[in-house]
Length: 497
Image (cartoon, rainbow, N blue to C red; front, top):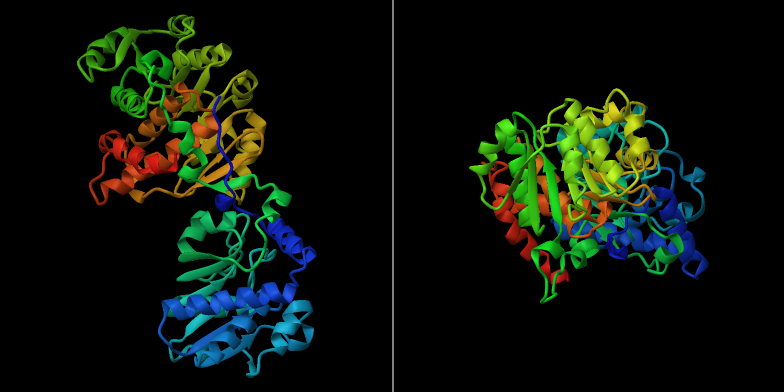
């Protein structure tokens, strides 16, 4: 099966991995203070690029993040900006490179006072970095809330203080930044829901860490993008034919017939050679009168559906969109898993195992993808549902179930049982419409039919799904619009091949 091609430019590093990158650079002869100088310079440059000269208040914390703030303050002051610097702590308690950076600052170090915000300054947030391990409270929490309440422009160093770089969790209080300057590679927390809300424009600065650090680290998490999977969509065999492009079979239900139709149309649009809808006898006329390119067969119960799978050319199976939550869906899922084909389980196909998810997990033997929303995820993994850190939750769910898991949302996370993960933020709120998930499931099924792994298919489909919404470009999007936009979305990624 065809899988993702890891790309270093899309790698996301957690706090421990970023520390390893720093250590790699230092071991290779780049002093820590050189890295700090470059970081502070990048923050000052971002501020000067995005804003006209104005009063600046630099808020520094007691660690290396604060050291970056001292450097940024010096650089802004040297450029003629009026700068005031606040340190939450004592200069004498600073250590290492942060102490060195404080020693290069020629201005005064002030105590926090709310009156510093009276002239609506630009705020440089260098209080806490991505690895904060305790909730913010007290004076610093009050200062953060006042800056937020005044809606002042904020340039954050690494992450907005209070946002955890790994989990995206808010620790007590967190600043709302217009710009965030981070270094070398982004972190998972930047692309969490709260990260998307609070980071503003994210700029990743080169501060001199060699790219070879990634080889040493071996990243396992990436930001989704065509560079990871566009090569999987290329089909340049002149002898290609519909049977070579795979056969997706979709189980339809007794009532919500539109769900299977949307999925089938998406599966064909994305390139599956054939798509069959397996339906109740009573609903066959509704499907036969619809899109003429869909193949329609009868499957009134699980046994009939299992018989369809005796044809090994049916290499990809989608169950869930409108399939219903009865025994037929449950039996069809187990038959599909036993057949060891590529299987996508969505919506109803997940709900029917809410009372016994372990049964579902035990039967996963072949390439399988689960595509829950948060409610369905909580039903399958009740002990993981309430935890902070969406990335960690989904990776644990994939390891536990033996299936690739796609947890939907503005920060969709796709995790493989081997520990690899992708975060997809290439989407719009317009996708919050009935039938949108059915289209996504059909896209995945169509890509699985063409030989992609569940991890590769889910990553490509999530991005293309979001790109269709972006191409629509305004209000009024409904699920029926998405398949028609897919050719343009596919064309937009052809340059990556």
